Structures are given as C-alpha cells and as structure tokens.
Length: 234
Length: 247
Image (cartoon, rainbow over all chains, first blue to last red; front, side, top):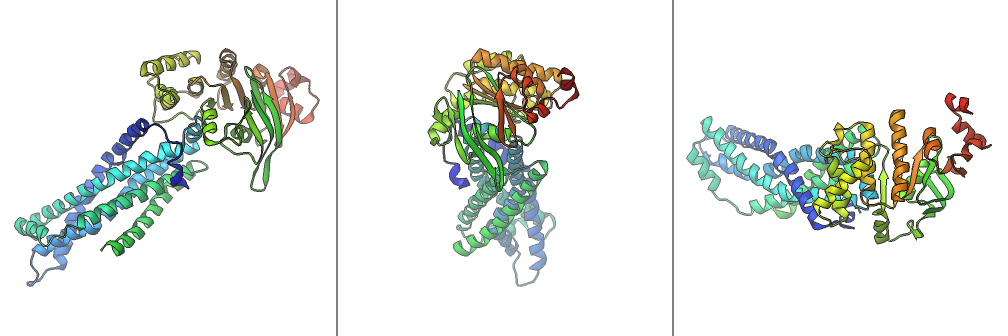
C-alpha cells in the first residue's frame, strides 16, 4: 500500500528531478568516504586471511587473489556495503522522515495538497537505485586494490601473481549478479527505512526507535534476500 | 464559508468528537476553543483532511470535502493555508524557499514573480530581509510569522491556525492575533483558529465555538461569551485570576 501510494497524485517531473539529484548527492556522494574505507580494508583483510589459510606447496599463490576477486564480487561488496549503507543511509532516511512527521512537516505537505509519501520517498528510492550499484562497483574495485596493496606490502603475494589470479578463470556473470544484488538491496534499504520513518508517531524517542528499526529490519531483509538471490541465480 | 455537519470521530473505543455542526463565516476569524483534550485539534484535522471523520461532512463553499474524489480533495487542499502549532517550517529550506514552496509546486509563475510574492507576504507579516535565514535561526514568533506567510502565499481562501499563540510571550501573542485578524479582513479568507488563549478569544473572536468533552456546548462572539451562563464555559473563561478580577 505504501509503495503504491508513491505513484498516486505525483508532482511535476521537474520537481522529482531536482529532488532526486539532491538525494543522489546525499545517498551516493556522501557515502563514498565510508564505502571506500570499508572496501579497501575488506580487500586487504580478505587477502591476508586467505593467504594464512591457503599456505601449502600444492596451492599456487594466485589462488589468493582469485578468492579475493570472487568473494568481493559475489558477496562482500554487495552485501557488506549494503549493511554499511543500511547503517548510514537507512538510519538517515528514517531519522529525517521521522523528524518531519513529529514536527508536522509531513502534515504541512498534505494540507498543501502534496502527496507527501510520493514527494519525500520516491526520490530517495530512485536515488538509492541509481547510486548504490555505483557504490558497489567502486567498492569492488577498491577492495581488489586493497587486497593488492596488502598482499604486496606484506609479501604474501607478488603483484604479477595477484593480477594473474584476478584474471584467472574469471566468470563474467559475477558482475551482473553483484549488480542485481545491489539493486535489490538498495530498494530494500530505501523502502524499509522510508516506511519506518514515514510512519513514526510520538516524539524524539520514537524517531530514535524508527532509525534503529530501519537499520535492523533492513539488515535482516538484506540477508534473507542475499540467500534467496544466491539460491535462484547461482 | 466552511460548514460542518455532524462530525464524529473515535479513536478505538474513545469517542473524541460527538456530532459537531457549525458554520465558519468568510472574512471573519472563527475560533474553536476549549480546554486541552476536548477535541479541538482533532476537529481541525478533520476539517483540513488530515483525519477522516467517522460520521458527518465538511463543506468548503458547498463542496463536500469529506467524500470528495482525489482531484477535488487536491483542488480544495490547494486553497487551504495552515499555520501549525510548531510552525512546521521545512528545516532544510531557508525562509524564502519555505514560503515559495507552495508556489514552486502549484504554480507556473516565473522565479521573479515568486520572489516578489514572497517579499510581499513577508512584508504583510512584518518581516523583511530575512529571506536567506534558516528556520533554526528564527525565534518562535518569527517562525509563526513565516508560517503565516507560507499559508497565505498561494492566495488561500481558507486559513487554519492551530494554537498560533502557544509558546509565545504575551506581547508577541497579541501581535500574531492582530496579524491573523488583519489578514483575514484584508484577504477575505475564511479563518479558523484553534486556541485556548483567552486573550485571543477576546481580541479576535468574531465567531466562537466552545467544545467540551468533544461536544459543541456554545457558539457566539467575543461580546456574548462574557455574559454566558453556561458553567463549563464560565469555568473555562474565568479560570485565571486576572479574568476573575475583570469579571
């Protein structure tokens, strides 16, 4: 019902365009720093831990980067970054909408004849769908780079071997699979967080609860969706 | 004119409004008064469509708002201006953007015309050269004035004010009352003010509806109200020492 209401009594497209651009900056550009930090260390740690577990004369070193590549594309970049995204963007969306609700700003929009859910939520969902896959692509790139840096700096793998492993038996389907996950997770985070925030009632305490619920529910939904997508698509 | 016919509203088992009827006249300040928890704000929310009454109807100049289709609802809502208790200014927008907001959404006029209209409304509410200030930089009284400016910027036919004096000092409260009265007469709007401020009742109450326990107990104007014999209304009016002395 909530999602259907987003498409009723819509405003002019121009209005949504500027709102969506603003949301893209808030959701995408402002998340870049945390996504970059998490991704670089995620790749670095995966390299070190894979090397630690795969030590043996029969296993070539390039397997380390092969594992980093596949783990990053299949799981770490879409899912871990989605969890980070839920924590940063989801709580922000729920907090913003919750505060607007309790301070009657949403009522003010309704009284003006504006479909408040469409006006406030639709640009957030569109922006999340546009920006999160880009963040996942950036994350995957940085994670692989982080793995390279960690591997070379700690001498667990040479640069050449790392690049060889990255290219070795690469399955191109992993990229669309990661992007499908990214779109699904972006929709989950934006819609659950918006719902929690939009239907906040009470005061500051309830806004806090909405933010917490947004993050918790989004994380659970992401993990369930992750399993279902893996089951269906792999 | 706004007419309400037999408005009833319940929340779960609790009946908040019991078949309230009345007529709010154009060009006058119409007050809905009563103690806290008597259903004033619920009635106001039913009037502006934020709540749906269980029974009864609201007519805006003969147009039934309660059973209106989506187009008519939007049409009527776009003729409504409302000042909220906490002003409800958009935090992320400055004063100019807040006031311009209804124009941006609902009209196709040029930016220059919109800015001129914003400045005109700001001058009407006695505020100038604060266009670029953020709501967080304004005092309570200034926020209310900006809220009024936003409510009238779209040439609203109907002006609703929810507790316009709450949280304001007596001097600012009087200024806000005077402003509402002046704008109502100047713009010929149907103005409905929900309040429990007795000063507002005496100053601007051209039509007053008194609610008690969700029922309309009395209606009249600010001269008649001081002569009433209804106990509940007398208890409400003369609840403070100053009013008792005046009596």
